[in-house]
Length: 441
Image (cartoon, rainbow, N blue to C red; front, top):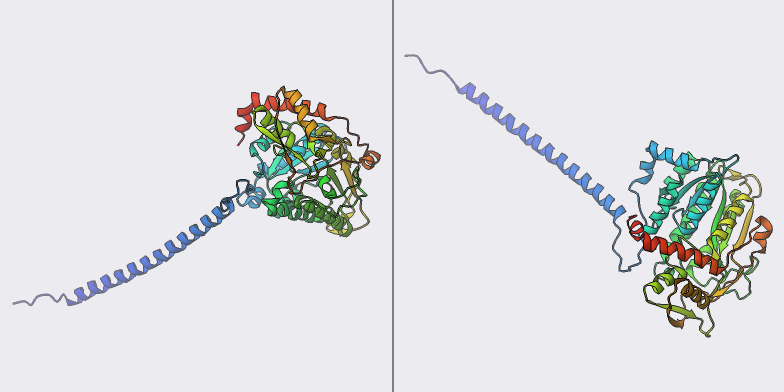
């Protein structure tokens, strides 16, 4: 009888192959798990980075500023051909020997008006604005739309984004910078002091760092403030008066800016002109200014606070109409000499100037309210209170003889005329086209 076939070798081989398969499957599972873990960790880190940039911690302060941040903006801008095309087109002058001007704070009040004036005469204008929420950004968006209709492109970015600023200067050989971006407001500095340091000091230094290294270096005209006169009691305020007694942090940062400007002029040969604005008002103005919110509250039947000094004197301001300020800014640009540095090295002494831009006619806040009552045909509900000790000064009055001498600055608009134009604009935009403004964001 034949013996059964020997299957032991086959069985052993099958067991061995099964063992090898189990080992391989285990290794594959382990490798897959490691890969999955690493991918998950990478995704988590990217999400944390994204939300850290775009969603800052909540603040108990209702006025907390959120500066718009463009996620990886510099990298994005660097690769966008369409974006670069817009930058070049907007900044290209259309008149012989026209300027190519970078206007910071272009979606702001003064920035919008200056940008339009420069573009109208054929200069190239590129705007920069971070659209922060110090006041309703919808108004800034409406200004941006107005600029876009005149072929002025506004780059959305912050002064402290060094890579973005460097990219702009790489694309465009700016002849001038009109630096109007700043954290404004005297009283808000008591709530959010860091925003003033970040914008008015750090942001200004960052801009000057980029400008000093540019080749060619641009001429710079920038906005200081009448607030630098602080506790000065001489009047009218003259550029020769002391400015070492600021009454607010806002004023201190603007004074710091003047000293910083001196340093960069001295070391790097940057041509720098500072303009001390005196209470600028008019159409497209800032909602945090008294004439603006007085108009709004009077029309809504709300009471308004009228401040008096601690010794019962009326508060007065040298209200300056926007068209006059624009003429001063353009005059300063036109008379600004070229910077003398190259690639961060000074070649010769450079121009350094400071001017008052005011109206030379202080008007009390009570008179301001009286004019508004007449224009609005509504009686204001007045609440007279003492001026709080928050940094405001009781009186401003500009001596503009130096600006007149150097570039013919001469204000021509009285407060009644200027407020009439503002009220007409306010009624049109906030009554007839209210939904359009609110729909900008």
